[in-house]
Length: 246
Ligand code: PTJ
Image 1: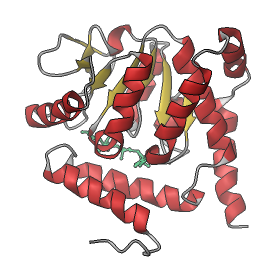
Image 2 (image 1 turned 90 degrees about the vertical axis):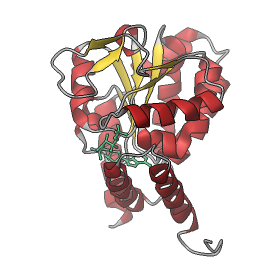
Image 3 (image 1 turned 90 degrees about the horizontal axis):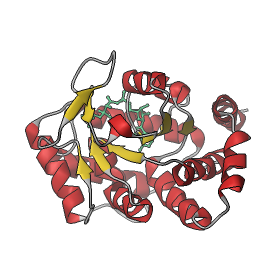
Image 4 (image 1 turned 180 degrees about the vertical axis):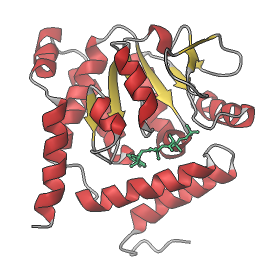
């Protein structure tokens, strides 16, 4: 129904995916609002992956390849937009996908689980059959995490979520890789690595870098991590926005 020559063609396609996911009981009602918030920041950064963010995605790949137990935590918005990329990353790295929802209901858990089952994900955690333990000092439905998943993970990927959980996971000395178009969000500030980019562009690039560096000497990857500063990354992201409007 959308004209390919429409100037906002891509953006409208992703809106359709979001609406579809809502109809299919995958996206929370608030997920629509979260998507709109993301669109606003994407407009400000110019709807493209900046050089700064390419570098950050490269560093994120280094983290995935040097940590012992990474987990991909997914919610409704991430599933709506990039479930195929999540399944691919899980396969390449041989790591679990854990469902963790802010607006948790048994129906949404089942619907999201079905998406990843269909995509052939080997280990799907966080379903209602799992064994859970609370995240210390975190209240609400996102506090319980899979005992074998996020609980034991040393690196957690938490794209597109609000700040309270990131702070508590960081307090547990876990590394956090986050994707958030808003460089000022609490999650962005608390994470170890914050990819300020639209997840639909960031995921394919992340997979590309993971493939590129999979055979690389670990010391080289650790050196890239050592030279990375997330605060500087966020400053660069904010300056990239300012520069566009100078
Ligand atoms: O599926 P649930 O129940 O776990 O609920 C998920 C939402 C997203 C509704 C919940 O975590 C929430 O309310 O999140 P917030 O506080 O709106 O934060 C979402 C963040 O993701 C915001 O900072 C947005 O700018 C950002 N964002 C939204 N869409 C994208 C994005 N970042 C990157 N790519 C996007 N496509």
